[in-house]
Image 1 (cartoon, rainbow over the protein chains, first blue to last red):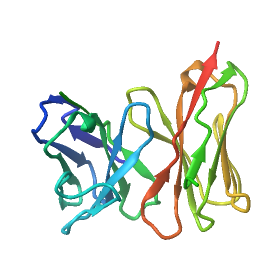
Image 2: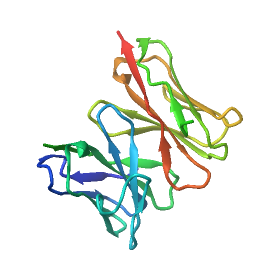
Image 3: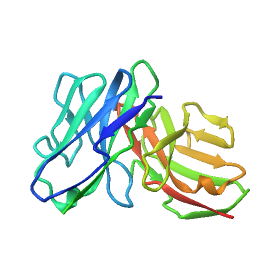
Length: 115
Length: 111
C-alpha cells in the first residue's frame, strides 16, 4: 500500500474564494487521481493528475474550476476556484503504485465547507 | 444503465451471520474488481481485489467473481458490529486506467 497525506484536513471558506488541497505520497506512484464525495453520495472522479502534463478531466469538470498540478511522482495539488456552497464536499486524493496492480489507495480526505 | 450497480441498502444483518453484498457491472471486458469499506467520515479502505472467476478468501471476507454474469459479490462471515459501514464495489474497465465506483451498500450489523 501507500501512505497518503492531505492538507488541509478540513476548511471552512467564503463564497468566491479559492482553496488549494495538497496530496503527498510516501513513495513514487504511477497514477494520481482526485475525487469528490458529496454528503451521502459515492465517489465522483474529477480528474487524473498527470506528471509533467495537463490533467485529464472527467465530463462535467473543467480546468478553470479545478486546476491541478503534479510536479513529480509523489505530489499533487487540486485547487477549487471561485467556490460556491455547492462545492461543499469531501475531496479525496487516490493513487496507484508504480509497477503494482491497478489497486487504488485513498488519502484521508479534505472536508470543505463553503459558506 | 449505470456502469457499476449496487443495492444502496441499508442491509441489516444479525451479529454472527453472513452478510452478502452484490454488485453488477456493464463493461464485459472489465478485468479488475475491488471492494472498499468506508466508515462514516472516513476515506475508503481496500478490503479485497479479485481478477479471476471464482472465489478469493481473506480471513472472514470472500470475494466472488462471475465474469459471464458480470457479477461480483462480497461475503462477510461471522459479522461483527465493527463491520457496519458502506461497502463500495469498484471495477476497472477494459479500456481505461481509472476505476469506476458503485454507489455503495450501507451495511448494519445488529447485536
